[in-house]
Amino acid sequence: MSVVRDDVTQSGPREGAGTTFRTVEWIGDAATGRLRMIDQTLLPTQFVEIDCDDVESVWQAIKRLSVRGAPAIGVAAAYGAVIGARSRGVSDPHTVRQALSQAAAHLSTSRPTAVNLFWALDRMQAAGDAALAGRQPLLESLLDEAHAIAEEDRAMCRAIGRHGAELMTDGDGVLTHCNAGGLATADYGTALAVMFSAHEQGKRLRVFADETRPLLQGARLTAWELVERGIDVTLICDNMAAQVMKEGKIQKVIVGADRIAANGDAANKIGTYGVAVLAKAHGIPFYVAAPSSTFDLSLTDGTGIPIEERDPREVTEGFGRRTAPEGVAVYNPAFDVTPAHLLAGIITERGVISPVDSHTVRTLMGTARASS
Ligand code: MRU
Image (cartoon, rainbow, N blue to C red; front, side):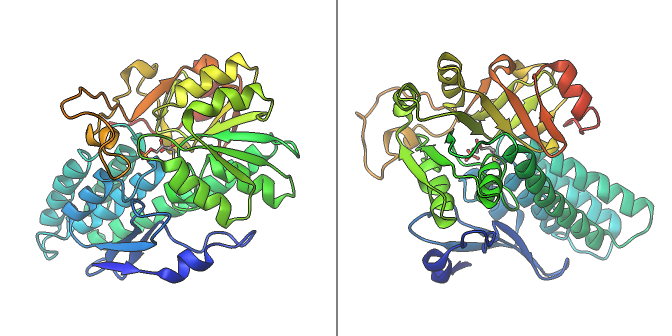
C-alpha cells in the first residue's frame, strides 16, 4: 500500500520547528501493526509513504533505497524483524523466536556495508532471547526493543548535533556529500544535525551539497532537507568540489558514515574519500559525524569493511535515460573508505574524537557493540 501525502511536500518542515515527517514509523500494535516509511527514491518531486507488513517488502525497501542511510536502515530492519517474528503464528514462543532468527538472517542480506543493519538485528535477537528466558510476551518485547533503537537514534542524533555545532563558526562554508540528514536516521541526522543545530544557535552557515552520483542523494535529499529548513544551500556537481575549495568557499567538510573501524577508518558514500583528499590538499578540516551504532570495533581497520557493488544501470541509466553505450563495462561501488589520517575528528553522541586513531576511538567508543 502506498500513501501519498502532498501536504508534506508543499509545506515541509519549517525552520526551527524540527522535522514534520517521520522517516521510519511503526503504526499499530505488535500483533497487527505495520512499518511505514518515506519512499526516498521519489523525493524531492513526490512525497509518498509506503507501508510494509511482510519481511520481503522491508528487504526490498532497503535494497532499492526507499529507506537508506545507515541508522535508518538499522531502525527499519528492527521493525522488519518484528514483522518477521509473527509470520508463522504467535501462539508458541519458540516458533516466534525461530521466525525472528529467519527474518533477521534474510534482512541481513539486503545491504552489506552499513553496520547499523547488523547491529540492530543483533539487538533484536538478544531481545528475543531475553524475553524467551524471562517468559515475557515475545512479540511485545521485540516491538519495545525496535522502539528503543529508534528512540536512542533520535537522542544520539540530537547529541551529535550539539557536539558538532560547537565546531562551527558563524559564516562558515560547509561542504557535505550524500545525505546524512533526518531522512538517513530516525530523526535529525548526523552530518546535517550539526548544521541544523548550528543554525538553531544562530550561526549562519553556507552549505555546499555535492549532488552525489550515481543516485543523487545530495541533490535529491540533502538539498531538499536544507531548503525545507531555510538553511542556505548551494548544489554542486561532485567534480566541482576542488574548484569550490580553491575559491576559498569551504571552511569545513562534514559527512556521515556507514561503518567505522576501530582505528577510525570510515566507510561512507562513494566519492567521500576523494573529498577528504581534496580537503587535505586545501588545508580544510574534514569531519565524520556518526553515532556509536556505526562503529564496528571488530575490524581493526577499514580494509575489512565490505563494499556494496550495485547495478550497473545506476550508472548507465541514472537520469531516466541511457547515457552510455550498450555493452560498456561498468564498475559501481556504492561506498569507499576514508583513512583515519585524513579525518580532523569524528563527531559522536559521546563527544568529538580528535585526533582519530585506535587509542582515541577505543577511549570514547570502548563500550560500543561490535557486529557479529
Ligand atoms: O546508499 P545510501 O544512500 O544508503 O548511503 C548513505 C550514506 O552513505 C550516508 O552518508 C551514511 O549512511 C550516513 S547516514 C547518517
